[in-house]
Length: 87
Image (tube, rainbow, N blue to C red):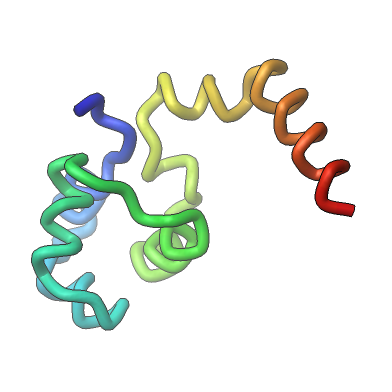
């Protein structure tokens, strides 16, 4: 699977462990391990909590290519269409 997040690197930079993060979020260490290896991804709400806990901007948790995708016109156009269809 393609690396989408930098959770493992940011944990290392902040001198925190995946066990600490799992305790803070109330999830299993196995769940955090999957995020750290990019086997699965946290949802956006959880990613925001992780950013708060690690005192970083959410953008710091995303790899460069994924940030570019999120900011791309194609994504914004698609999101705008999805938002309008839910009104």
